[in-house]
Length: 298
Ligand code: HEC
Image (cartoon, rainbow, N blue to C red; front, side, top):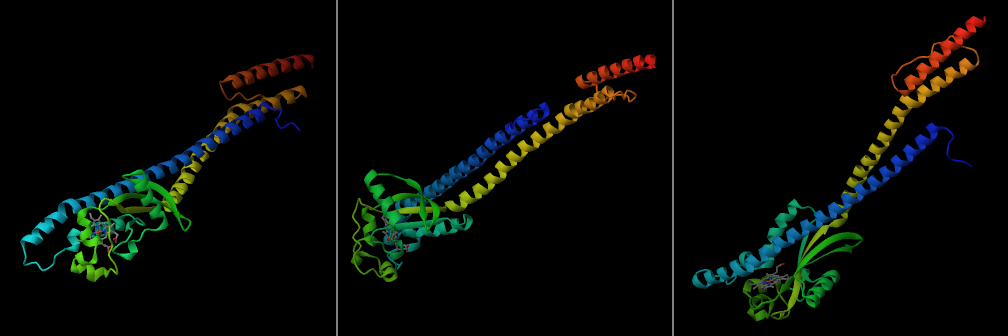
């Protein structure tokens, strides 16, 4: 079976149709992929920015706020408390500031975890254990990857938490802990963190699945639009070709057939000044000449 039509019109239309569809598909798919790649990059940047802020907060509390508070607590003995959770625990401050941030970034989660934690909820999950192990083995300062939890993908970014001497007051032996910590968390045994160890990590989770889903929807819309635009342009080209080339040729053909059958009275319309117009003019001259000869013969 021969699929290629005989007529030039058919060949041209098939050619334009194929080129437009293929290029439309290629550009459409490219646009779709681009949309997803952009969303991934934006997601990575967002999560790393938030991680960086969390890190800055924890460092500030550790290095500036906490020593300053100890200095003041030592000076003003009228203050009964020996430790102020709201200002001295970086985990507490980070969690609270993050809580406010997550109001603006739906679905974003922060987890501060450690082996032998004060708060049992801060026990590392299997994924977190694996990443903390990576921190230890490769001495990484930061780590980002996509993880799947209950078939839902998250982008997780984390940095390690290293123990220094100051941590042992609350994360060492029960007898050293401030009263308020002992009362609040009621630890059953000494936590015994060791100075220099990477004890845990701060993890930021971004709902990647939702980001990707949104990117896919946007990609389908944008890619589909590009594809539709290609098809529209193809339609327009076919319409113009048909209107200005193929249709006038058909009309000329009809007239030529009539002349060949002896119907020579009908004037051939000349509508344009282009090549087809010239052809129509030549046909019209031919018709007039034939008509003259026929009249003489009558
Ligand atoms: C004076 C008390 C105090 C000191 C000192 C302290 N922390 Fe904490 N830390 C806390 C409290 C309280 C929590 C629990 C917050 C919560 O309920 O989530 C906590 C929680 C954490 C957590 C989350 C895991 C867990 O144990 O619940 C990490 C990680 C952590 N601290 C790291 C450190 C490091 C590292 C240092 C030393 C630089 C340090 N902390 C010093 C009071 C302290």
